Amino acid sequence: MRRPRNWSRALLLIWMGLVFVFLFLPILVVIIYSFNGGRNLYVWTEFSTRWYWVAVHNPRVVNALIVSLQAATISCAIAVCLGVPAGIALARRKGMWSPPFMVLLFIILGTPELVSAIGQMIWLDRIGLYDGLLRLAVGHSLFNLAVVILIVRARAEGLGEALEDAAADLGAVPWRAFMQITLPLMLPAVLASVLLSFILSFDDVIISLFVQRPGTSTLPIQILSSFKPGLKGDVAAIVVITLGVTLAGMLVAALMLRRSDKRGKFLGGALN
Amino acid sequence: MRIRIPRFSMAIPAMAWWAAFFIAPLGAIIYFSFGIKPSDPGAGVVDLTSLSFSNYIAATSEVYLTVFQITMRTAGLGTLACALVGFPVAYVLARHITTRWQPILLFLLVLPFWISFLLRTFAWRIILAPEGVLSHALQDIGLLSGPLSMLDTNSAVQLGIIYNYLPLMVLPMFVALDKIDPALIRGSMDLGAGPVRTFLSITLPLALPGILGGMVLTFILASGDYVVPAILGGAKGLMIGNLVATQILAAQNLPMGSAMAVILILMICGIVLSMLMLLMAFRWLLRTIAGPAVDARALSVAVAAETRERT
Image (cartoon, rainbow over all chains, first blue to last red):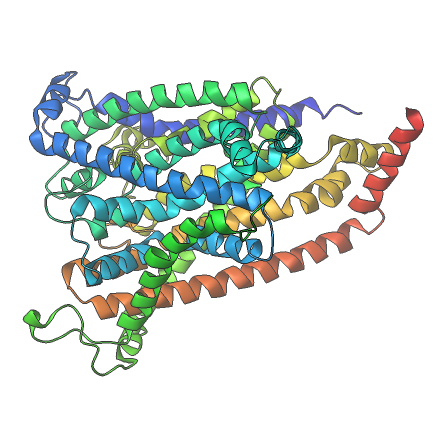
């Protein structure tokens, strides 16, 4: 095999480097400006950590953070409870039903969030679901469910059925084989999908904006509403704090996935 | 003894959930789009006594059509830019990076997704500010004569869209490129095709589904975007998402907003379909330019046969 010429390789690597700089520049800016002591987030005045102190003492920000965490937890639970069996079924119980099901799944992934959000708002009002937290959780769960199903299906297909067949040969009834073999094998996929759907829900703007009720604003909605009167350092500080927590979570997930999966399968596997 | 249960029984809860909270709401949007906003505010959000196309007629008036047009152009250009900027990155990740670094770089690529999308977009306001560092730097080196005036225009929205959807475009392209068997490339080279021809007749056709998937995904998301234009676009950079949101959240005109949402979906469907057709044409063009001599499938058979002989 001829080695690719070095200059083209170097050019490509430089290009990739530039793209990564482009992707990370705004994140760096947020981190740096969260230490901006000025009254206005955009105008740098002096280094200070005062906005961190302000942020954790602002009841509205803290409340929004709590709402975000609660909504993410519930929507995550819904998505995982419904998505794991469906994902396994897609890999193990294929049939006439699977192609239309996949079409529905891709329609859900492909529908603009805005359209889905409007539909949610109309529908949840219609059926009389007025609990702010539940509305957020239900709204976020639809897209997350699709993501969970894709991840679990990719894992179940990657593993093959040999172990379950062996369990059946050794006399395990299907239920027992499912509980003792299939589910534990799915654990990494379940963890990955828990993380992903939690974060998708945590970061969601559009669905939250439409389905929210007074008093249950999520953190992104809080940030968005403080945009008009002028953004202050406290939102940047709270985002940097959540970033730290997220990174820690991602690290744990990455380590777990590395143990259990081959390279590049984290999101790549789900997109196959 | 096995009890016969339907094969899809484990998927029933998911289906029921989607039916109740996705399909039903979609139906509600379509239904509502034919109603009118009641003149009496106490009468609820929508009057469905006489269904008509009046919202659709209003939503296709010139003012709105212009915004629809701008939206499609911004999303289309953004998608194209993401593909052009992202393809080399996906290519490097799949080809020129060792397996040791690959997962780390992939992790870095998706990392921005895990940081508040809103704040990342706000950060561009700091970067692009007329009195900001970038503006001063560009003026100092003489690239700009006055302060940077990109904020609150369509070009800032364009930049924000490229920024937000770039990783989403790279991932499917990477998956497609990564799946290509290196033996095919080697085989093509062995058979005498140069790097350019190998790229055009092996790599690109095999990666096309991934490129296409990424473009469709990016386009759909970008054309329904609300946040980026709301933050970076100001009054001059509006997209259709902002108009829909205004209709519903500010003007309380649910039927009108619903009709606009339906039009948005129809437009996206139309454009995605024509994109598909365009790419089919592109594939055909590639085949004619590169010639049928190096057919990827025939090649893979040849490579497989050769490996078998060797072992």
